Image (cartoon, rainbow, N blue to C red):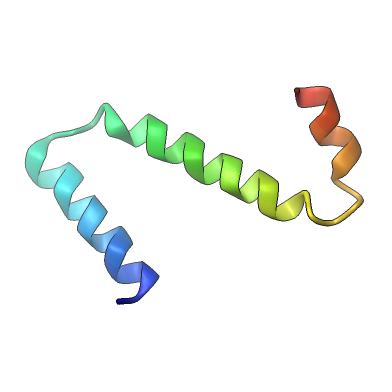
Length: 52
């Protein structure tokens, strides 16, 4: 099962069941995941320490 298929299923779930309150939570998890992904390079590390 591809990652895009999982995202499409999640989007369909949000649209059919009107679970709009989940959208901000999912967006924050995605942003946190991107932050962790980009933090693996040493150039971003000092900026992360100022956030926390």
